[in-house]
Length: 88
Image 1 (cartoon, rainbow, N blue to C red):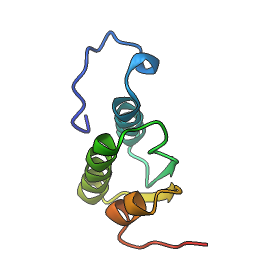
Image 2 (cartoon, helix red, strand yellow; image 1 turned 135 degrees about the horizontal axis):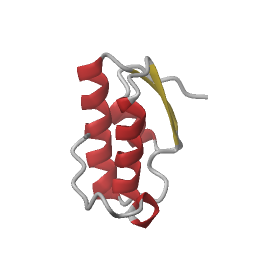
Image 3 (spheres, rainbow, N blue to C red; image 1 turned 180 degrees about the vertical axis):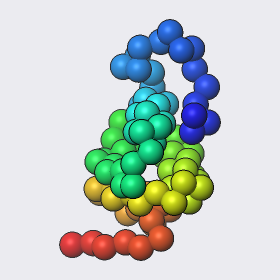
Image 4 (spheres, rainbow, N blue to C red; image 1 turned 90 degrees about the horizontal axis):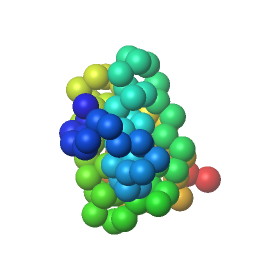
């Protein structure tokens, strides 16, 4: 799901930040919601993982016709995942 490859026996809390966020995204999307709220999804995630996470979120949202609402201080990430962006 969402390109996650890890030992299914591992506790999610023991995964690195990027993989932990991708697992949480996969779990949320598996419920087939119309909207997913992403609250600071890049917190505790290294830059390389942020790029992969942005690509995964955009891909999943486009394929499923899913709306995402992202709360983040990372402008670069926001531009990478959002077709429309509002700032204040």
